[in-house]
Length: 273
Image (cartoon, rainbow, N blue to C red; front, side, top):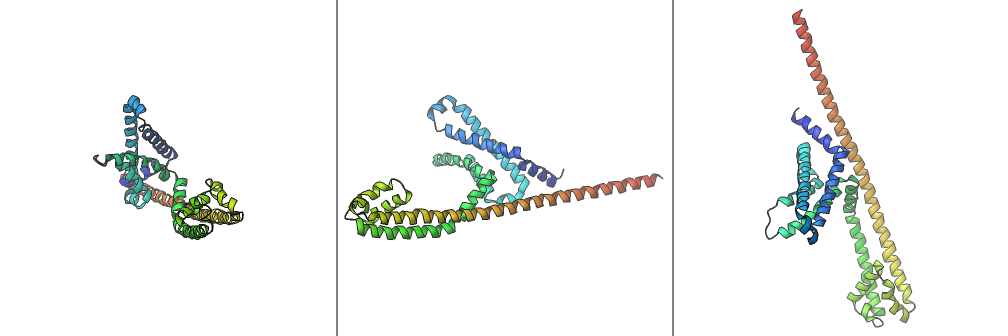
């Protein structure tokens, strides 16, 4: 078997569901091992076995990356997810030293390999990244709303409730708490008891900041997710067509080889006659 055929065979192996399921299972086992390593009592009793399992999972990761590198060649480095996988696995082989504590912490990033292994998770993350420009505009709108409301609440309620609205900073913090819905009634109640009309101000602020802005965030996220789903479907179609083209090429090459063998056999028969 030539190198091209070997690469096709390895690529077909990597794409098999059982292979993907095995990688996911190893990632989960590695995540559990990293969690157990944080327990001193567990490591005191089962430290050697835990380290052995951890190194075994690392060996599986290295073998999987090696197979993917062999199958994809330079195409491997075109994918940001592949580069991320290579980075989180390579961390284990960086020499220790003063930064060894930081490197040990970074090992938990291997759990994030689930994002690159499971296609649906990749789509969600890619959609979230795609929403950043739109989210930036909505975040700017929210900041403007918070600032204007903070200035108004400081002027209107600063003397009544200086703890929450005595200055611009405390007003911004209080209104942000109101936006999150975290015990916001206790923030508003002292002011509302002194100024019954204050409920209208805060209810209007909650409606605008929480519901309108939140709905805008959801709309941008859903739109990005739809676009990412379309791109993923297009990518899957391209992959299928690519595999079909490779299979067709292999079949045609086999047919040509068979024709040559038949021609050689006919030539031998004619020579005998």
